[in-house]
Length: 344
Ligand code: AMP
Ligand code: MG
Image 1 (tube, rainbow, N blue to C red):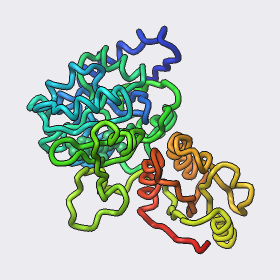
Image 2: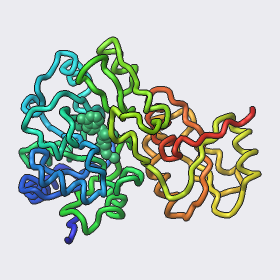
Image 3: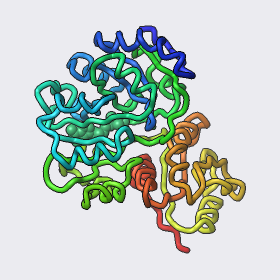
Image 4: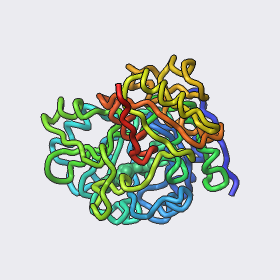
């Protein structure tokens, strides 16, 4: 199929979105910008559209899709009920990078929810995402618009690399501001729990609900045989082709380690200003103290490592505090949780 690219640079261009919105309502697929990463959108109420999303991404069928809405009134028909704590979170952080899981209604086909009895819903903030949901007139299922397993796309060029020829439209709205996927929180039973960290931090959830757990799969590799609360957590993810190892320890120890392992094909993934002290090519992914900048750059940096032919990557350990928890989680999964503790 031919993939049509539509470039949107200002609200004056929004009428150009109508043909893609009509295509979405009719069962087609379009990659759309959101404030987190680019999403591969299809009509969430149409099982055939959801199946096409899985096929285009090569995504395992048991990994459920997040449903995107533009208005609170679109939420209630998708879920069995909206508990009071869910409403409070939505009022605090929607529109924004937060996904809430609740028991689903029968409007959500099994193909969209990966066979689960719950559904994940998010209201994005990006004006183009909101405009296209509104014009389509249906909620849109939209996982990240990458080939399954590759780093998520933060620019339309990344989507093109992975999905050109497999989907109807790519809406190019420039770079995504947050750069990592939404925080996924389940309110479908028990204590509110973060299944995937993102732009809305555990502290921000606690500020509204008083409590918030973080699923152990955020910090460590799931043991074989353990059931994942979030099916996406069990797959190798975000990974460039190179083998990535995270080095934990101070900068001086990192420099010493990398410079004594400076073979051909070795790259460093480090913080701003550190590359010039290394004897291998380096990609810098934000200032050490700026988790927001690291989130914004991480996936782009992982893709660049592929482009430059890296075979072995040594990465600096992010802080894990605030939005840094999302950066830590994505980088550790790109590294299949391989960490070397350096002596200080
Ligand atoms: P993506 O759409 O690529 O950003 O990935 C969506 C993430 O949300 C994956 O890790 C899914 O496993 C997770 N997810 C979506 N819906 C549910 C659900 N109903 N229950 C648990 N996790 C979910
Ligand atoms: Mg994804």
